[in-house]
Amino acid sequence: MDLFRRIRRKPTLELEDIQATVLRARPEPYFGTHAILEITDPAAGKELLRRLAPRVTSAARWDEPQPSWMALAVTYQGLVALGVPESSLSSFPANFRAGMAARAERLRDTGPNAPEHWEFPFGTARVHVAVTVFAENEADWQSEVAAYERELREVPGVNLLSHQDFGADGFNVFGYRDGFSQPVVEGSGAEPLPGDGRPIKAGEFVLGYPSETGSPLATPAPDVLGRNGTYVVFRKYHSHVDAFNRYLHDNGRTKAERELLAAKLVGRWRSGAPLALAPDRDDAALGADPKRINDFDYADDPRGLHTPLGSHIRRMNPRDTKLEVLTDVNIRRIIRRSTSYGEPLPADALTDDGRPRGLDFIALGARAIDNVEFLQSEWVNSGNFVGLGKEKDPMISLQDKKGAYFTVPGSPPRRIQNIQSFNTLLGGEYFFMPGLSAIDWLSR
Ligand code: HEM
Image (cartoon, rainbow, N blue to C red):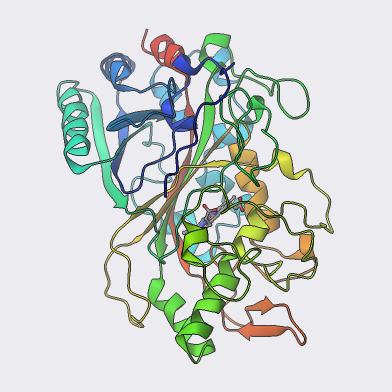
């Protein structure tokens, strides 16, 4: 499917100064690498930024294909390591300054998901800069990675702490098409596709522009640092596809029953076709059609007879679902740039092969940190907002060891017991993704 939206109106955002990843969709298939860097002295950090700055791609012509592009983001500890003055450091929001590990309670990252179990370097104060390369083919990916690695080797005082390759054909390791339902950013030049809803005010996603509340959100000081920047929430998950497959097998006698349950859990068939438009059987052509794949709401399905109220996409974007705990859904939107790593496990594999596979969940937005904290605590790990009590998100929550279930509404409703945690958190961090002039400011 062509994930690209097109520039149809004159953009009003400063696209040359905004990083490409904010507006550029990843291609299908895609290749890439996430690298985490540590800065051991400010001069080295500034030198690194000077060298990488020309490689960081802007969002200008974000709708045109590009062989590869690079993104750069900095943690609070990274800003400290770069020697950013206190007056500026203290202008960043408290949760960003604390870092993801310190926010574990609010994020409900407990038990196996707690920071003490995370992979190095996540959760340590040594995570300073993240560099991501996205590419549409293997050759351009490799040459872009080789280029930044050359720069890294030439800057003593900067350490490469981790390097993770990713890539997929557009389907995640559970076999679902993923990453296409995105908010439309006002002023980006994108025309909404059917079902996208109205464009959301740019200030929800890029700092320095009016937000849904009318005025811009608090922007870090000085203006050159904050303007055109955004926040990034990065969460690396290991996916237990074997446990997911077993759940389907334990609760579906035929392949058709298992695939229907798989669709009920997410709210979409693996092809991407939404249950709202294809309630009984998959429709691959619908799943491959960007003009139809999002063209639905939940108005005619208040009880969740087609799309369960507790399914992943209905929780994460309730659209017009009547919520028991009121919230403005338009300020809860996030841009997702998640990437999959590892080989998918086929749907008939009921035991684990022990190989790493999963998803690097990446959310962008001026409120991305607040929003993911909100989603994790209210809409992922609780069901109260749609009258589901203790029931949790079937794909990404931390399920209780005993008594966890997923409800498929109907007459009578089917309560499917023994749902497991299908994804375990391996680590994560909060980043600030500066605009291009801000990278220049940081490097001086
Ligand atoms: C391993 C982890 C995850 C998996 C396998 C997963 C899977 C999916 C799939 C298959 C879709 C439907 C395709 C699409 O709309 O692009 C989706 C949509 C979505 N997911 Fe996830 N997801 C994961 C983690 C998360 C997390 C951690 C969040 C937020 C805290 C999240 C928020 C969303 C949102 C907002 C949508 C779009 C819903 C819509 O607009 O209708 N996902 N996810």
